[in-house]
Length: 235
Image (tube, rainbow, N blue to C red; front, side, top):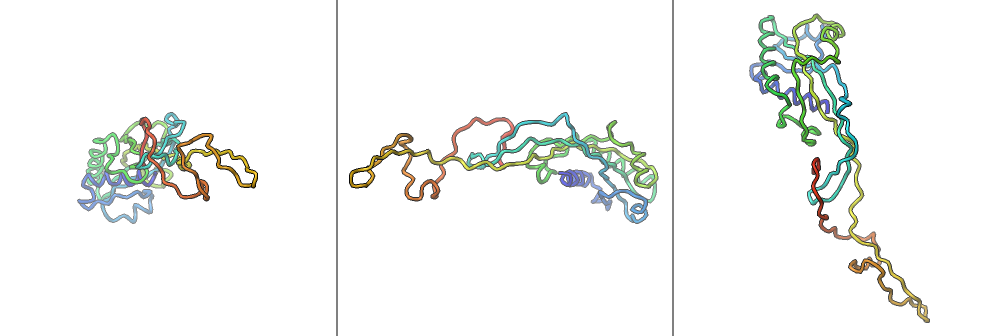
């Protein structure tokens, strides 16, 4: 999920016209050595904090159905995490850095969520809203000054960007649907030792399993009608 959030954020910044104007969008840690090697105008979105939002933790399991409506898996509910980025602009002059940072700020504050068209992988499959908060208070996240100190660099203007994204729950395959009812037969033995024809005690509408029994190949019938519930999704 983390790399999918990275990609969504990078695509969003790319739509602001940064890459078209020759500005690189990277996810590197802006250390002192990295800054010394930089040669082109750059916007850096550095992920430095990941925390679970325990208030949104759910319980139970959801059901996954195939295109024919058959149950194929059960999935535990997603768990939500907050990913905090330090977004900085790098250029030869402070004026140019501030211009880039203003362009980034204009792009990010225009969105409360990462647009669905930019989501990939499990984020796109889940179809859930990925929240985006730019410049929020973030009282539980490390202060920017602490991050710069840990990176060994000098403090500079930056944006705090927090993304709230779901981590897909674990899936467990469901047993295949029952396609045959149980056939129970009782038979009496004749005087010559041959068994008499049996009679069905139950499930008279089910065909005889034959010599292969129920292990033989059988055609699966249509899925039973069911009531759709909110949250039901197809893979």
